[in-house]
Amino acid sequence: MIPSIVLGLLVAFALVGLLMPLYLRLLRWLGFGKQIRDDGPQAHHAKAGTPTMGGLLIIAVVVGLAFLFRLVDASTFAPLAALALVGLLGAADDYLNARTGIGIRAAQKLLWQSVVALFAAWQIQDTYNLDAFRVPFVGDVAVGPGLWIALAAFAIISASNGVNITDGLDGLAGGTLIFAFIAFVIIALLNVPTQANLAAVCAIAIGALLGFLWFNVHPAQVFMGDSGALSLGAALAVTALVTGQLLILPLIGIVFVVETGSVILQILSFKLTGRRVFRMSPLHHHFELGGWDEEKITMRFWIVAALAAMLGVVLFLASIQALPAGGG
Image 1 (tube, one colour):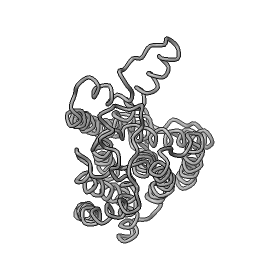
Image 2 (image 1 turned 120 degrees about the vertical axis):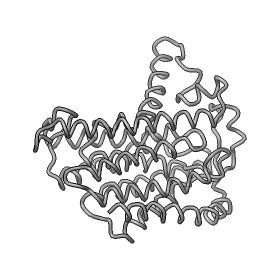
Image 3 (image 1 turned 180 degrees about the vertical axis):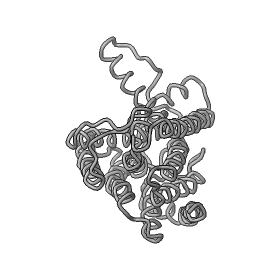
Image 4 (image 1 turned 45 degrees about the horizontal axis):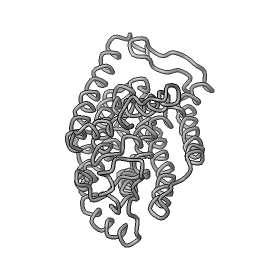
């Protein structure tokens, strides 16, 4: 089991590493360069024209290897479907941004995300006949199938947008996603029953992200784009749902939670008081305008993500050991 998971990771890393130079040539030939918004940090204007839509290659490698290694089953169908379907939305947004500087409208994007999220939530609920969420140290708390689907869909949309908000510095989203998926590799392997195929798909995602980071660390040669950030965030939330550990996801993905919270807090503060809490949101821009180097911000956020992932796994292990047999 472990050797095949490591093999999948290594093959994904090698494929992205080998294909990315050719893919970058294609993106440049098509003119898919990032257009930088005027309301962001001024230093980011130097990144204008950097190829975007790098996430599409990650999706292709993950989905392709999942089928090649015959990993598609009840535990992996929903994460792979969310990855592919939300990836299409993100790719369309990246395309429009590269061509016009304006992506898909927020309302239209949210509508498509909602459709995919509801489909994924329904598929998981129908497959596993779920009507409860697993609360650490408590067990399963029933909420009913309808509310389960609604809350699960909300979690998918939130995680998708949370990763997208975090994707604002070279290597930031990719690195934090790697630590989150590492946590779910461990959780899937130790879950009852064991979800080996899901662990293998998470490992493939890690390998693909590592290959992507080879080209995305500062100074980035390619950006993940919405095609990667939105889809990988959605897939991460679906993975948490399939493992039954959705309530541990906010800890494992604490960077995404804090980044999203900083945006919400900034908007509420400005509307209610006319004052800003941060120099600029999301939070990584606050530190950037405070004089921190981009690499320092990224590395420190990676450290937080690594610690959060470890704590999430520890909470999972402590919870299942504390519960009696059959207690969720």
